[in-house]
Length: 159
Image (tube, rainbow, N blue to C red):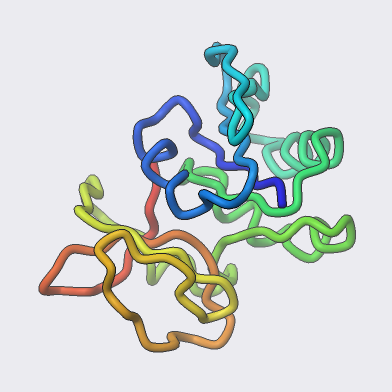
């Protein structure tokens, strides 16, 4: 499986890679990106940032690079991708974001500096960096969420 993580120039993206150790991970970002290719991961550039056409740019990139799943880490990517998830799905690309109507409830008002993060796919926690076991959340909850113990309130894990 080939997974695209946006915000690839950020340390959070590198931290997230450990959740997908058995998959090939493509870390991508806008502007200049280091040119590194290994057996398990690579870096790529989306080119110049144009927030008006984020979903279109990322869909074209995913199709060109044969991406199976995309994890948006930039806050400005989450809503456009969530709203375009059905279109991505028609191309066999799974978008890991909450449903559009749930996004605001998972946004953090302050700069999110979470000690831990968890990855959910269709309500099932597939990875928790702190080793915690999360019970099933909303049926369709998907995405990467940060949290701090003992408060396990989930907020979007963004850069």
